[in-house]
Amino acid sequence: MKPDASERRVLERRLPDEQATMRLGEDLAMALRAGDVIALTGDLGAGKTTLSRALIRAMADDAGLEVPSPTFTLVQSYDTRVPIHHFDLYRLTSADELDELGLDEMLATGAALVEWPDRAGDSLPTDAISLEIEHLDDGRLARISGSGPALARINRSLAMRDFLAAAGWGEASRRHLTGDASARSYETVALAGEARVLMNSPRLVLGPPVRDGKPYAVIAHTAQSVAAFVAVDRALGDGGISVPRIFAQDLEQGFLLIEYLGSGSFLGTNGEPVVERYAAAGGLLAAIHGRPWQPRLEAAPGTVHEVPPFDRDALMIEVDLLVDWYVPYATGRPAGESLRAGFRAAWNAVFDRLDTAEKSLVLRDFHSPNIIWRGERQGHDRLGVIDFQDALIGPSAYDVASLAMDARVTVPREIEATTVKAYVDARKQAGAFDEAAFAEAYAIMAAQRNSKILGIFVRLNERDGKPAYLKHLPRISDYLRRALAHPALAELRDFYVRNGLIGDAG
Image (cartoon, rainbow, N blue to C red; front, side, top):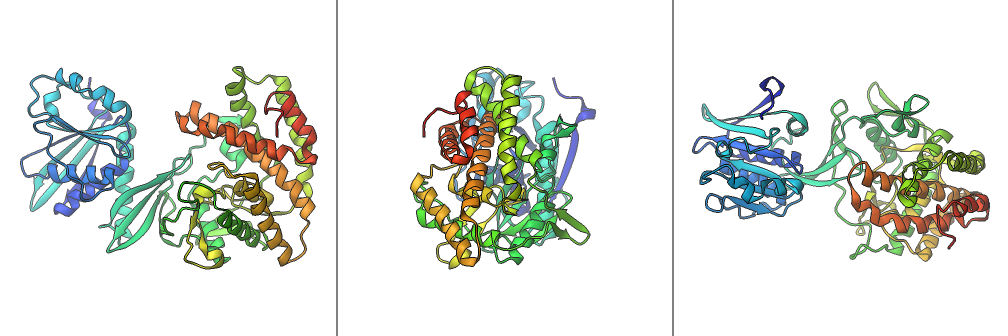
């Protein structure tokens, strides 16, 4: 059954030439997700083949990929970022043959581009996107109709193309770069041999109230708009930190065109930590934490971002993720009220120790995925920093723990120690520095961060359907044991061991 026509929206794009048709194919490719179906129609010579080829090549990130017509095979499949299955149903004798071709199974993990969709009868999903290309004057008109999330994604992708056009980059090619655990995504865009990054950062959906009538993101001070990125980027750049230059911005829609800092991985060839790079990053953090930062930062004329404090409510709601998500996962039953009360009491006693800890600008996720290594450069310029929109004013030791106990890669104890030493040595060289106070704050923030991450990674699996994060749990548990070994955390460690939150090892 097709959706009610009144529920369907229609988007139109004029395509004056073949290049515009190819760009539309790229725009569609950037929006596709598993389960999406595009039903493509148009007269002979309307540009269906051109659009299909551009879409598939963009999905494959291969401009020279051979894309044969599936007229005789009925379907041609491509192992791309999201697997794409190109159907040509002209030779289909019965709609039932779609079941034999395995359309439903293909859509479980991939997307489909379907030519001659009328031959499928009612066999295509009701939320399939219809794309009709017709002749118009000397060019073409593309009419895209549908409803639901797929059309919303396509509409946003087209808006991103319009944003590029307003910035003078309308003819740029687009390729998926990366996504993260949030709704943000990034693309590389290329024009005349130059590459930049297109950042797609929609306004944060706050979700339901979880405590004191406030959503989690409000209590944890998660950035709600891209203005936070812009403001912190400008402050860091003015402070001599290598962050992306911003060439164009649309704060309302959440689009940025920013500098491409390179593709150099902070990790080694096989994804292993490199001691010299971690030590260099420790030195960079020392430079950041050794200077004052103002909490009021300008994102644009008339738009000021107030960097939030890493206050007790934020610290506590983050660490509570362990009892909310990890405890049920690890024990098979929800955390009881007694455990919750004891957990919060133990952590409140620990957080009291942070009242006198050094505070600075905390980038919050300063670890390998968010650092670009540029070994050909000198000093701190070797490190490009790309993720900081959730920055807070809080215990500076947090960022050191984020780096030295990298959530995405196993950092051996000796590299952790070298990283921390590089930081401490740089701080001492710059002036007076209380190493003992830092060591205690480092242990507290490492325990807080790794407790939080255990909960987040389970939540990503159970709530968001992202099981890949579970493989990191043993590493995070080991980091947590390392942090809790500090004498100042003896009572908290005993609570964790007593309640089975960590093993009595390390």
